[in-house]
Length: 152
Length: 269
Length: 117
Image 1 (cartoon, chains in turn orange, yellow, brown):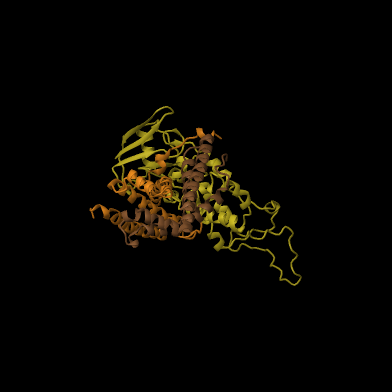
Image 2 (image 1 turned 90 degrees about the vertical axis):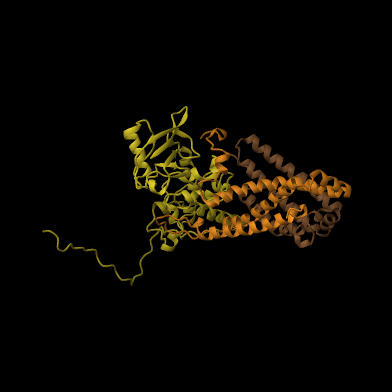
């Protein structure tokens, strides 16, 4: 066997680029990206909330430094809200799939044209429903976030 | 029709264009054969049976891994064909990839029947019985032809070359789901490893590209469920009772089977 | 196959992730509802010091659960993403160490915030 780090590796772009594949692979890429966004935000968020413990002056200072009233920060928060919504909804579907073996269909005798049951009907319906819920809640969050700016 | 093929001669890679006449029902393998016979004798690719049962001719066609012999020009709906070697493998030459790791991964999950008492396999007096319903729980994953197309589609194999891969995991589940097999404890060390079943995040691309409808993604999710059941609840599927080594005496009043005297009637004198 | 990523067995690691994820679905929904229009405020008004302080003290236990679940789930997820990416032993140890330090720091900061208020 070849050394671990000397093997051929296609790379991270091949892993995250879902073009030409099924919809589940798009959800995989999105799940991964939103997860990283949320993890990075979580670090910043804990540090931010830590300033509450230092008193009202420190909190105001933090808010001003972050510029939480600006449009770019609002859009950033909107993306993070969308990430949380999507990651949660899709994560619930993945738990149903992986830990409970649901939405997969039973093993069947494969017949041409081969339609994998793990990617058909119930799976697709779950993805469409979760996408619809996420999009509706995300628009709602966007309207709410931009309310104070006088745009909406 | 314009055909672009990704070439590799050991040192450099390049795209080479060919002009080929193709009808809607021409397979990609026909095109490759035509190119090698008439246009370019140096083109290297694998093929054998030409009917989708040997699994040698896996290539990437217009960005989707598939068997060249089962893909027809008409179903692609493009004017330009883009043929590449399978993703996520080391390329040896042109469209030929190195399948050594792939085969070793398959071997590492022990894809054969394991009994706790090996004597049962050697000296079994009767068959291990499997009902049609039990057969249906694993027969789908038995159709694998080891073409390696699923590993080319898998996003985890692209970043983790040591990941066992959908093919081997599906085969592992095929034997774990088999009521005759008792090798779950022997396989779980490989499956529950850092490069094992938990590196799968259910992108489902393996099932999408599988040319035989094996649906490896389904097998892997069921495998995860089995492993969680085993770890959390210490439960696993019961194997069929072992075949009896010592044959029972038939009861004294049992009707005797009719003697075997077969006469071929109406035969030639 | 060589190379064990973590001290836990991989299946226990994933059980932890699933359990924390299921907890967070409820707790994080609650947390998001606290800064949503259902509070009758605009978003900027939910960021005032008095409102934040009231929430953090009144729902102290909920936020404590959320803090621990989110930090462990999030950092472990980040670790999985980073570690699947490169397979050099030294890099993987570095990532594991970094994540352990991050978890310790974040939990210390968060716990301090919740206790002091």
